[in-house]
Length: 252
Ligand code: 1GP
Image (cartoon, rainbow, N blue to C red; front, side, top):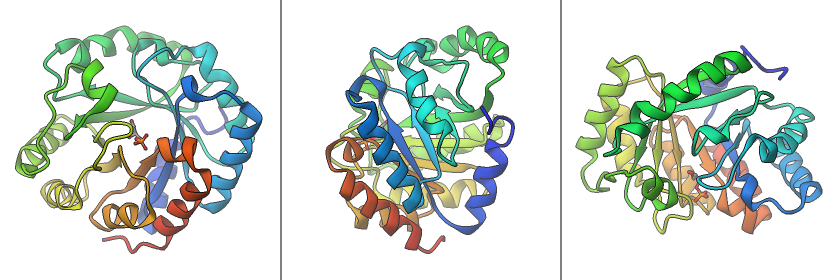
């Protein structure tokens, strides 16, 4: 909890210098906490800036806390990335307070948030107001969230959503292709949205990013932070290469 109240300031100051990397840990997929600890230590040494904790299914505070314990020993914040109201923990530093703007079900736009808000207040977690947009494949997040995924070849629709988020006062935009997506969000899509919202939104891009060159292309297109999850679980060495490559990318 030592980062509470300082997470947004930290993210925004790093953003001035470089593209950030967020490592996503889905508690449901963790079966060896010692192994996870080593992997996260290595990632942070390579430049990972924050650990996102969350998943679409079967995640409770009980599953999150042992991961927060590991992150507490690293020099980066723990940020909840909840798939549902069950994905809250009183011990995390911050939360991506998500509104799934392209859901057809208002529960995912504002319903879950109403249930979560008083709990977040009670827990004292730092809130990062985030527009969550499902693009392309969508995966479990798209399915569970009743999303109408944005077509990859229509970035103008994404830009309209992003502008609406900006005008609603949200400060973060998460472009999500879905965990394990066959294709990540195209760099042209990211570039189009960056141009539309200018510097006002902190743009996070994730889903299907599993090689250094793709990560770098997206980073160079205007993303502020790149998220990787699956590659960390399947090939931690490759995940390290991705982080190192992102850190060498020039910010646009
Ligand atoms: C999923 O964007 C994240 O919510 C990460 O996706 O697991 O494909 O890296 P991957």
